[in-house]
Length: 572
Image 1 (tube, rainbow, N blue to C red):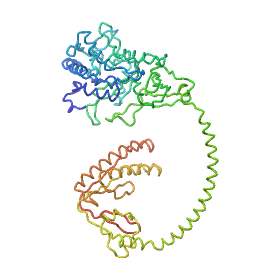
Image 2 (cartoon, rainbow, N blue to C red):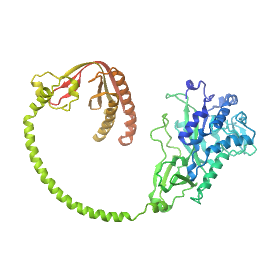
Image 3 (tube, helix red, strand yellow):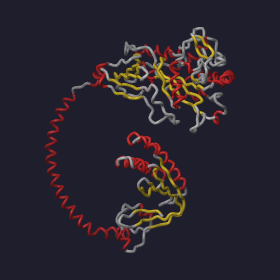
Image 4 (tube, rainbow, N blue to C red):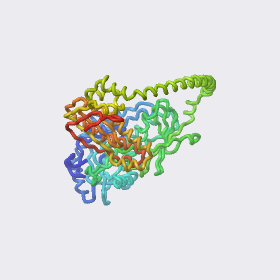
């Protein structure tokens, strides 16, 4: 975000319509909570505290949004299928916004006042933050809770978040932090415990959710554990888009780990154990049955008999997020070890393959005898065809120049380029036509646009590659260009090495020939960026450094067939 979008200076920023914007993010990301946390330096502390008190109206707006549109947050916690029974998350939201409010005589206009200072928790009591900055006070968040307000709580004091926040600041990357038990959390965050005199039923929503999921799954797995593993995805917010940017705030998105497994496996995937772990010493286990994701406990609980059948997958983002911020790979990188189970083995064990193997052996023997006979007949036929082809080639070789000349100039009567371009006889040897003095095939097209493009950095890149890798790149890129050319009505003339030549305005006139070519050129540039990122895995890490540069020119063009040993369509 920049100043032009928000009309204010960081950290004194409140994003408009935050609940509405955040609800769509929660739904698409299947997340639980989202919070915007500004970065406040030591000399900005007092200024921020005054600002936060005077600009807390977003809380009432957010609370009113939840009361009016409870379904807006449905997608963020739609984990009803985890326990095999549909849980009504809307009911939980309504309990949070109505039940808790009525129990404390609060409404959307009577939320408890926020702390007037940046604070933390010491021995269960809220105390003012006295350390040095930078501070990261909790600010705008969704959903808005009517209970004890954690606004202005210094997130840098949360034990599991301190390192993650520091990694975000140093690397300017997004970070998926350590896990915490969401059923024991407050407001969807791993806040420290506060004495009961300060908070009222803070854990109601997620504690009730965990109880329902646990109770519903006990019929399937009596050993199922109680808890909801979750983690914070920390995302940096910059003050500018260019390279001199500074992290001025953070987005904190709380995600449940079981949401990663929703709808990711086929319906008959029964008895799969997913052990999620990181090098920071954290590990927990899920069991997947059909569309149910059951939490087994905070340990590696897979069946040891299937240790050798493990399939490991790093939890990563291919390339980068849509805003160009990559996910940090160095901090507590999560991975998933997937194991089968005895339940899965029984479901897929079958003696039928042995029967099929015997039948296939008999068929193979019979087929082998048929192939021997077929091979004899084919060989005899091939000898006959070879003799015939040799005789035919001798005749064609003696008649070829005259036949080609008669077909192109007398029988076909190619009087203009358009007819020639649409004729299947393009590219044949027309040397005899030049010698005979016949009129060349050429026309003037007064309104055309020509594009000449080449791959920047191709020479250096190709010098360090195998020939097959060079052709993989060229075939992939220029094959994509050809498809784009068909969509935009662009005529491809030829490719020369890493150069691509195309034209609009011929053979049929096009009034918008320049616009077509510009659109085509921009599409080609975007396509090269996308394809080189995809090919980076197979062709080397510097493949993404390759770019496509173009030159366009509009005006009259002379086009025709330059006859010779290998005739080609040419532009002049």
